[in-house]
Image (tube, rainbow, N blue to C red):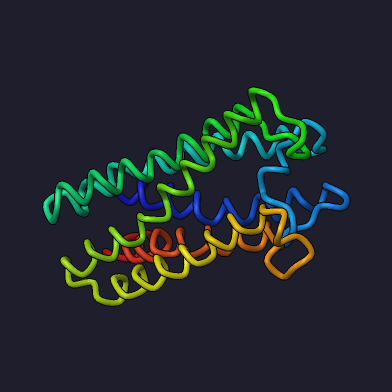
Length: 207
């Protein structure tokens, strides 16, 4: 099942590396103030590449499911199913649907595609935010104390930064330190992904 963990690790690394590299070809793009989805807006010079990545992101995440089943199913079927459902919602909502339906350059330009993107991405992020908690429980049950602690801490920090990400969109926080929407999105995603990275690396290193 190493192929599944390799796919998961590819998704985690790629979801930071791809936006960083593509932003080099998007004049004026700000990693701290702008969300990653803007790289795929209709006016973006890297639109096709970023939206293709989102489709691949969804594929890589879904391809990791057999590895989760083999590793955790016997430990707790219920928790494993929950992890798969929540990760699947993110893979489909924030990955595949977001890749097929682009967000617009500004929030005032709303159409069907941007609404589908917004709903899919929002539901996906909310679902993924609880995965570290479930992985923490599963890791502790398997005696993987280090990953269990890492996942628990990641869950707490991920929630904090996700809340800041939501707040950054509010008008009353404009021109304050909270308005750094892009930064909070990336930090929340970092901690949501960190347990995935830790488990993947550990499993890939095992004989």
